Image (cartoon, rainbow, N blue to C red; front, top):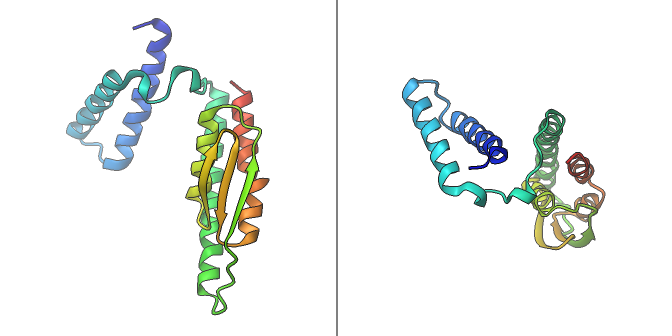
Length: 165
C-alpha cells in the first residue's frame, strides 16, 4: 500500500463508517466495532473499484465544503420538486406534458456527469433516460421541468467542484 493511497483508504473507510452510523443510528460499542470492521473490510477487498483513482475528487477542506453545499442544495431541490409534483398530481386537470429533452453539459469528469444524472433522477418529475459522453436524455413530467434541467444550477456547482481539483 502506497503512502499516497493510505489517505484515500482512510478517507473511504471514514465515509463508509459514517454511512454505517447513519443507517444503524446506534452508538452502542458493538455496533461501532461492527461498523468499523465492515468499513475496513470493504475498503481492503474493494480497493480501487469503488471509484477509480483518477476519477476521485481531491478531498481538500474547500472541496468537502463544496460537496456538502451540493448535497444540501440537492435536498432543497428534491423538496421543491416533491411539492411541484404533488401540486400537479392533486390538480383535477392533471396539467402534465411529458417531454424528452436532449442537452450537453460542460462537465469533464465521468464521475461528475454520473452525479448530475443521478441528481436529475432523484429529483421528482425528471428522469435521466440516457447519458452518452456529455449528452443527456432527460424525461420531464412537464415541458417546463425538462427545460429547467438544461440550465440547472446544480450542474454549475458540480463544475465548480471539478475545477477545484
